Image 1: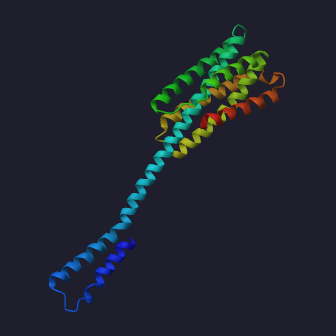
Image 2: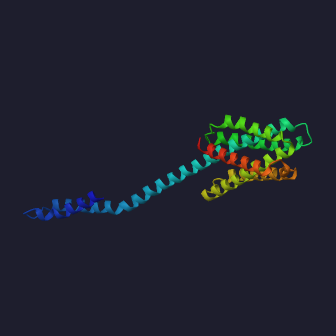
Image 3: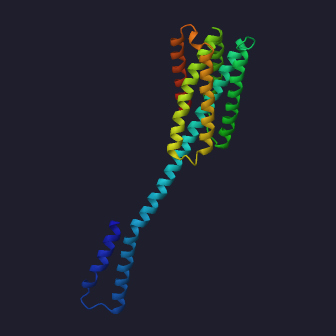
Length: 236
């Protein structure tokens, strides 16, 4: 910008330097150069606005892409964990009266996991490298709490689904704030799965979760573990 202004000033001030009056041709050339430089200066704000708008659009697109990638990666990991928790519980309590209740919740988690496995491919999202660890740890958590009886298994369910329900609500707020129309399909999926998880939470309470030994302590530890898993899955 400074260079262009200097160029105009130079073009304007060159005329008086000639000792003899400038020829009509030279005068016309200088006038043309001044007008051209003036038009260049006047067009700069428009060029700048277009450039800034383009940069802003690219930045918005990158943020949206990162948001969707993060959500799908975390939810895929979470649904894998839920699937393995119920698998562990069913391995211990499958032949008891509580077996069908666990099986019904497990079947819904299988549907959730299958959906996010498709979304991973569809959106080319990066899955977390923690999947093998969550696979083993979640099964151990499900089986371990089930060994305390149906109350222990249901206490685990209530704690896990509390965290997942809150997390899904947070994701819904982020998606709606970013672009509710663009994320319409993903919002509908997450809403349905959130409702399923909250139903699992209520099922756990209805099946004596709060009667589990050391319920409060167990619930607190499981919730911390779930939040830690979410934090790690988001980043690696």
